[in-house]
Image (spheres, rainbow, N blue to C red):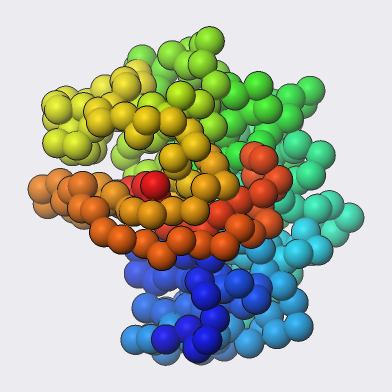
Length: 334
């Protein structure tokens, strides 16, 4: 379906998916509304189709949101396409983009990681800065207010700290700093921020549960959050019935709690959604999640072909293939 190319990374959104192949090409399939597939139209694609806009360019990372997509090319440029509502594409307007369009606000910056949320987006640049744009409700952009941003805006709360990874969820955001700390901000309903309460946070706030631990990966879902520490432990918090796999309880947790089973060690893990944890090739994938009020799905385990190492500077400057989930789906690749 991808021709003769080997997939090294995939990103699964609510209604569409992207695949990155070893030659730096991007393929998309699924629902085509608002141009989220990047083919210049709004047609659905039942099979992967190569995005021709990137011909002659090498893409090194992709992320999928609710109705939009983001990619990074080897020169550090960010590109976005799909639904432009709320400014989530970062082009200074709210227009849909049927083809990938370079985010000009990053001119002179080297983008090293991106994360597409439901109605907002996050990025980190080579200087360790975090950037956000899109819908600002509940403080999910981290600027101390609830204003939407049509262009990427630097999150000043991280001044003096180096951000190495970001994760945009439905209504909240997570970040990892170079010292392995986790900060969260946005909508606190269901305890998804991990601060022991359900209060919204307009500015990034450190998750104190991880004091003394080094976090290597985070994932922000619709109503829950996940983290992985350097010892390979998986931590989860907030409302989502992942309990059948993780915490053996369906209660809402406002603080991170260590999940079972443990994944053993960080070296056994490749990625959790869009944040790298180890460059080891994946051998199996576990999926948890729900849609609407359905029962928990998993985990379900299945084989995944080992992926070649690829450029990804989010944490280590190198990486491996990934399987990524959005909203209420969680995919962990081992």
